[in-house]
Image (cartoon, rainbow, N blue to C red; front, side, top):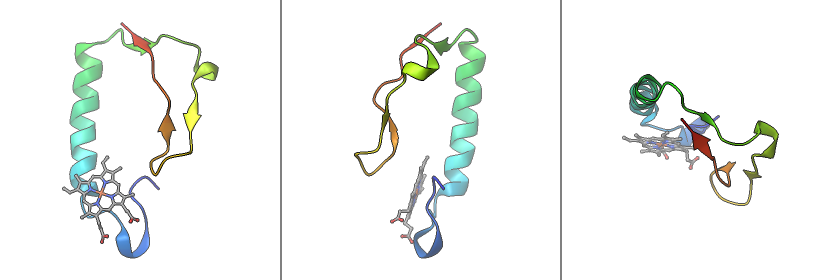
Length: 61
Ligand code: HEM
C-alpha cells in the first residue's frame, strides 16, 4: 500500500525497499538500544497530509 497501486504504482519501489533494508539494518545494528521514549499508545497519527504518518516519534537509546 505504501507504494501506490495500478497505473501509478511506484517505479522506484524495488530500489526503495533495498535502501530501506540497508538503512534500517544499519541503524538498529549501530544503535542496538534504540527504542521508543514514550508509550506506544501516546503516539499521535496524522491523516491530514498527502503522506500518512506520525506527528512525532520520540526515541531514546
Ligand atoms: C520509501 C520510498 C518511496 C515511497 C513510499 C514511494 C511511494 C510512491 C507512491 C505512493 C507512488 C504513487 C503516487 C500516485 O499514486 O500518484 C509513487 C510513484 C512513483 N515513484 Fe515512488 N516511492 C518511494 C521511492 C521512490 C524511488 C526511490 C523512486 C525512484 C528512484 C520512485 C519513483 C517513483 C515514480 C517515477 C513514480 C510515478 C509512477 C507513475 O506515476 O507511473 N519512488 N511512489
